[in-house]
Length: 268
Image 1 (cartoon, helix red, strand yellow):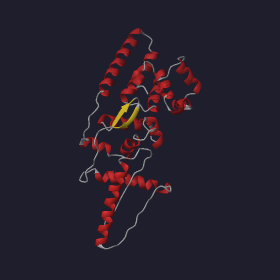
Image 2 (cartoon, one colour):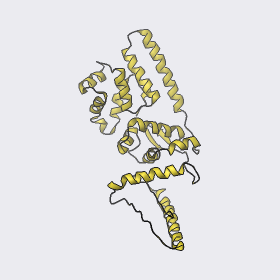
Image 3 (cartoon, helix red, strand yellow):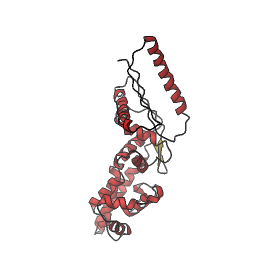
Image 4 (cartoon, one colour):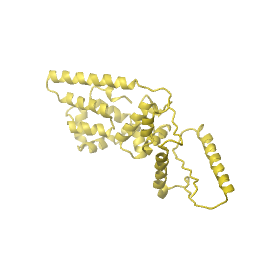
């Protein structure tokens, strides 16, 4: 899928974006019209060039497609350009559009090599479940666009776009031909990290949210128990062995579905 900066008018951007969606975006124009608070016939007139979006509608359109700040500024300028009445204004807007295009190319060239996350990047990455969740989901074919990720997690596109932009900026994601996939950046959170408690808490909370809807393929088990010190150590070693075995299965496994694993073995 092309970037918004590749288009000279917002009409082509909308049509191209919809057609690039699964099933060629069937039913998508109806959703866009509803989001913009307009009738589908009016949207059709705009896309045919008979009418123009208002700036409010253009802004809502950017939210619908989950555009970031720079992309939104570009689309709003395109909307301004359509409504411009003098050559002087058109030239001024054209220069601003070119400036934004140049800025977008600079950003696009920043592709970090293989490295570990900085402390500030880790603070963002482990701040909420959807950062690690989206990062893991994009390894599965069919979930490598903002649209697909948004639908899978039922998250707003604008939020997903913010997360994917961050993942791209850190090298956790790479993008090729419009498809996102995990990048080369190394991710590891040390047991001594001040973020480790929040990381565990986030995913345990997700487990609690899932409990009422667990399927036969999922397991939830909690059991306070008393046992000998020797047997407690045996359980400890079993859990360590289990985690090691899971990692050996996971690493070569093809990415087809998404799970998360929480393991607790804690002395009361």
